[in-house]
Length: 423
Image 1 (cartoon, helix red, strand yellow):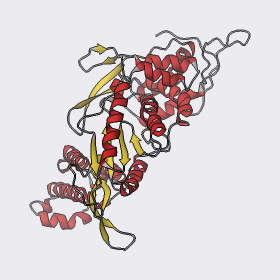
Image 2 (tube, rainbow, N blue to C red; image 1 turned 90 degrees about the vertical axis):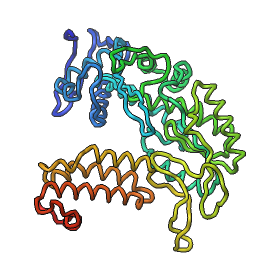
Image 3 (cartoon, rainbow, N blue to C red; image 1 turned 180 degrees about the vertical axis):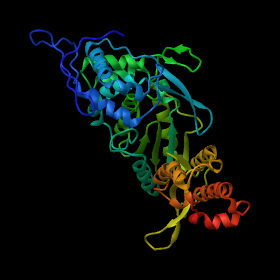
Image 4 (cartoon, rainbow, N blue to C red; image 1 turned 120 degrees about the vertical axis):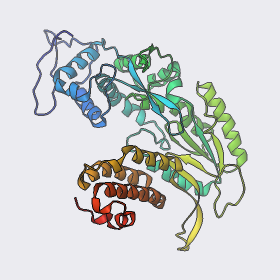
């Protein structure tokens, strides 16, 4: 790649500050005016998110080794309109429910470019999103969605749970671009969004496939575009036609709270037609009507529980603040599928075989993972995690029995002395 023309560039202590490029007479030479500081800010955010290399095999460390030139080159091309996104790298990742999902991994430079556009575009759409949309939004979290769902399940007897099948692969480009054009007039934002939507994907076999619909799952700008599309397809549409119906959506997973089974069946029919009209389809196995059965609601129905964001909502014994005793409530706790995935992760780590590691090294390795699990899945009904903690403790006992000679073959002694192990 040849050397590109550049103007005055300041050399900071940490990250580069790109100078201005002007023709003689002070007239800007670029057709698009993009703030250079956006690229420095975008790189900081991309680096914080980490991630692997794209098809060019350039890692974050490689990109940072020549950071000033790389950021300048990217700004130069985007400002001139000549930046063409490279194909995204297709990576098949396993689903918790079985099967695989194709994840599109852009190159590091392309992730920075997408972040620049996201920083410019997101504030304009964030202002119009409704408060019951929680996925991939600043200031919103999965715990907030779970908390509001738990409270509403106490007030409503029925829940319509729905999942959109292949959301990121099936969004129609024409409808999506119409939504984008309602919220920006910047020609460079529209230009690069069109190019990213049609950027091909390179499969693991090496074959390059063109895209005619959808937005790559794994792209920086993709969650914002998916949220914008569903804002018009579902959120705003439902709020306008059925203003008294309460709902909650996190990306492609959604819940609608209903007063009766009849209302739930009616809403299921209308939203199925609505999604079909907009090029989407409800997942046949993950869409269902659920009866919120507990100690107060004792009816019978084929489905009395549902999974949402790694939690299972069902009848459980819980504290009754009114009486100070116990009652049967419809409350969330970590799902069996999530517990199974965490146990499998612990097994794959093969901790019992890591006898060359000290206890401190083992703690440094495992504690961030355990803290993350407890922080997320322990926010509601934490006692459901006790079984996982016992499983990990048994793993530590097996490690200690292999590492320390005086504990070999003495499982009971290893269990009693695991808190007093010294390296």
